[in-house]
Length: 252
Ligand code: 13P
Image (cartoon, rainbow, N blue to C red; front, side):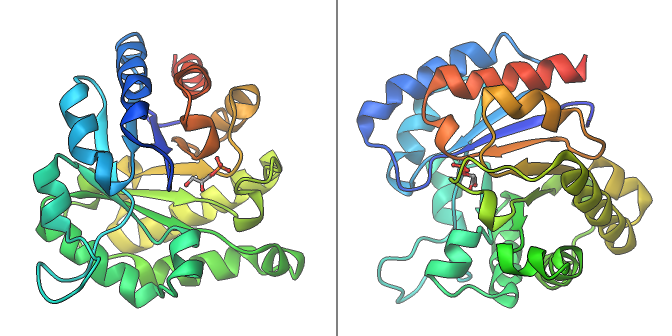
């Protein structure tokens, strides 16, 4: 567990202005867990509004374009989300890789654009059930990350990695503690190889995939698990902050 665990809510395509009261409730509760860094990534349309409502938590985006501006109808650039109040961006989520055919090179290009715009990064990785069944999960995730991570001098300050096995997302199934610990150790090894020992030690590796208040403590207590990337359970302040509480207890 990192010195300051990171609990991030990925709201995905959920939320209208009616969700602002939930953001306020998350923000108020986060003030009780100063040992934990809490953040939410709402849809683009809510970034600015959530940013204006909160004091304690950071706000992020769920994607950005590789270009700064241009003829890209419907796309949003990193500088636009930064201007709206985002401090970080989630990149390479499996839903984007699947629904928008994003490959590793695109994730890396987006991450370079985001860094240029002053955003911090949460880069996602994770294998399918088929890959895990074949015994190739670690090999797959290593190759995926190796090709997605940007060249960056201060990775320890700018980068977070999220391991989200695809088969655990939104299914109620979580990976076994042994599998999570083994994958996070593999990812730590890759980060050390890529950025050096000192930077790697400060990069937080989050686990994602059906994290709930009920299973958060066991997951957060695993070596090299420095927080969580939470989908469904981040849509309510009660369940999301139950996860933050679990992280705070483990961090103590
Ligand atoms: P769930 O927590 O809903 O499984 O989603 C995880 C996820 O994809 C977060 O990015």
